[in-house]
Length: 475
Ligand SMILES: Cc1ncc(COP(=O)(O)O)c(C=O)c1O
Image (tube, rainbow, N blue to C red; front, side):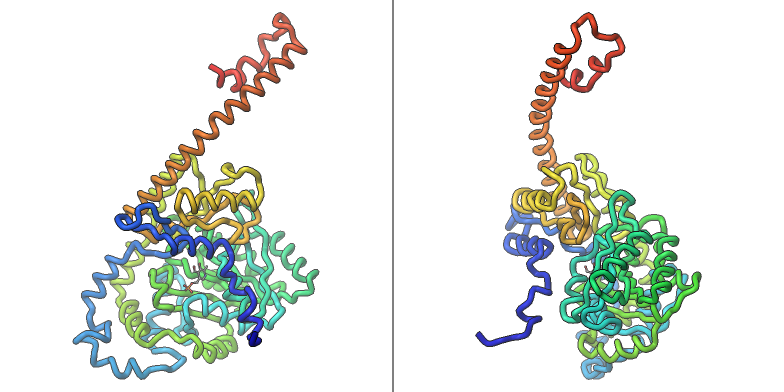
């Protein structure tokens, strides 16, 4: 066989993980209300599809934003020829302004620091190339987006070291967890070059509070390592408390700004993953300069830059879009979490993102990742929903699943909820006889023991036994 590269033959892409397996299961049998009513419903895709009617209206009202219209065609030639890796000035200005608006207007972004890339995927790799050499490491709090293993590691040779966060404190990023990961990396002879945080979090749907962010900035300054803040879900915060960006925190606390880098994209906040608009916003001049040169490998098409520049410089549209999008997400989130809670499924309390972090720990046959995978197989093959198991997000504890709720219409959501309800009813029915059996055998052994130790006339009026739920369950 002809030899090809290690990258080409290795498994660094991670395509064989269950996260991607679920997508494959969906792709071979996708749900369609008429053609494939028994197909798999895709709930593993963090897409924001709830505002497309709103956006479509703007597109219809602004034919000049499209190059293939009578109103826009006079810009066709110059746009088709444009290929400067600095990007169109009006695009950078519009994106910088949008980033400020999404953060409540509390911070301003400098258009000259906006560097474009092919989605946040490309932006992460670009940052990794700029900050670390092969074999050096970034710390990443768990659970984290599975794509990071591909984006930051695959082609750069950079290692990711998990910062283990736990459900016992709602997956908080603590100083102790950061220190433990840092020490572990050192023990493995890895030089730690940075910490990557995702705020709002994918998969948790939560945001980092001010104190945690301040603690993180303190930590990276003390260790003199970089901080990459993935803020691509910034505009999806649909409920209090308000989103706080790392760009706000560094205005408040002492910090070496050369260490701070933000990754942004329009894939989630606007719902445009197909446009591949990714942004690196670094406060470090050397990184901006290098990243800009690297952006030749993943420029955003000038046609897209043109459209986005027009759309995002329409202040009225942007202001209304931000409000509308949050309202739609809130409505969906409320309905979805309420419906799940009615069938006994809980989830981590969240106020952002396009997904919930569903707690199915009580459905596991045992507390293992094998049992988590068994349950995942049932969900994908029998319930016919593609949800993502926590293990694919490097979650430390089995039983958590990420479920996306904004990538489908209302009817598909209803079908998904119906399937979940039916599954839970079946599960509960199956549990009842088992519980009753267990109760019956317990009752037997209890009564035997009672016979052993107490004669009926020895029974105390305060004995807990008559009030026991075991007894009540019998009647
Ligand atoms: C946290 C996070 N970062 C980056 C990405 C990649 O985004 P993009 O489509 O802009 O490449 C995703 C996509 O799901 C994500 O969730």
